[in-house]
Image (cartoon, rainbow, N blue to C red; front, top):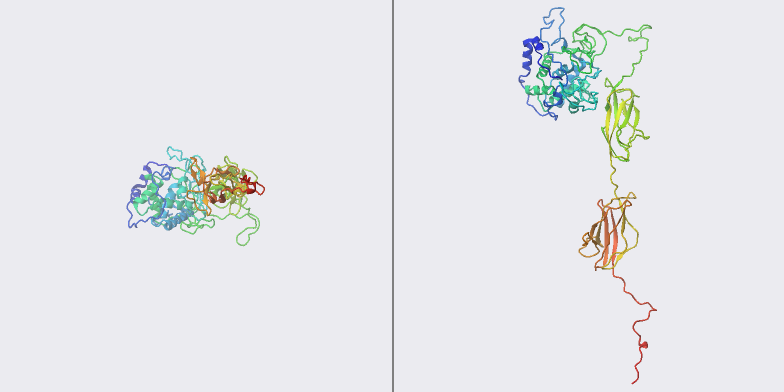
Length: 599
């Protein structure tokens, strides 16, 4: 909203009454209730993007001059309070009152009146009439967009939403009936109509978000200071505050004349219209209730009659559709001609219907599938069969089934389209899955996909390679090579760290005797971290020494994850050699001893 200078001509036109009205808006509220924290949203300050100039607001104040018909003379046409332009389209009025009801429940200490939300809607977009035109469900037939926020007379805000709401991937633009900047909508967006979507182009959502924004920071709007701060945070301009509060007070002074949701109210007298829109014709019929206007019926009411049965300020009438020639009429007013079925409403946007972030491990499939909802301009689900294209964008070998980078799915079940299962490929990294509607130039929906490295395989088994008892003599070494293989799910595991520990026969730690390894300094150690296994899962133990002690021992080999194998060790002296039966005795027998000579 562009910050404008004081409109002296406008103020002078309205005279002292307007000046007194505006001045009264900043006085302290009488009987204000104590303030209690109600909402966790931080209070937006004057540096918030929303408070900076992002368009040209309608700063025209209500016309407080005496109105024709005020004297009560017969035949005079009485205008609604505040002049001919004080009426509020029925759907907009319902949205503002709905926002107040939501705020009462969610932010009870805020005390925001619906008339304040209506004041914002009036100044920002003439209640969505500046090029938007409301559908009965609250969506605008065309987007209401502010100018590109490129700096200069406006704030400079580079794109923050990828063009999702404003269709601009270079700079942000204010969006919707209450002109939210996309970066502010992310923080304060609301679902005012309970359809599960937060859409700034829907006046129910926009009004609820406006109430949330104004109430943020635990404000109590019965306090004049909080009220002033709240509106300034929407547009840091005193003229803007004066205009919004003047319209709020005008709406508070009496029953507001609702007008049907017609082709839109005229633009502001200054001729300012949000960028990207065109002013719509004036002469909107008046009258109707706060429910969406439905065609049908005639009348000459002044804005307080039943919906669809009254004309507005200009005295126009709602005429029934002309009867088609040919054929008689059936009971109930219908003709014999069959109506031509309407063409399917065009798709105007895609909404994300699943998580934005996708993650998978290299070589595996993504468990989540991107999902979007295609909607028409009225916020209704697109017809079944609408073609949605999913495309892989980025440097990746991830693929859809069949090895393709694109896949087309048609909508069903309320405008939903789901991408096929996505295979992650073998390259770790990030890429984008983009959803678009074929044949429609609307903002795409992007999903951020990440492929992570596969975790290192874990050894769930350790086995000794070879067989045979492990035996050694005292003060010697085990001559047999001891080799261990690490397996994970039956396959060799490279890089497994194993610790070898010598224990007694019962698996208890040894004191200072028994078999031992040598550390890097050549000193005896009975616990040693082995080199990691090679690509074949193998590791060979270093030399294992014995001291003078004999007996049975155990060798425990274990990974950090608790995979263990235990081997038996034996240290024993070698058996003594005994002569065989045919081996001659080294000591001569008596028979072999020579006899001494006779004396």
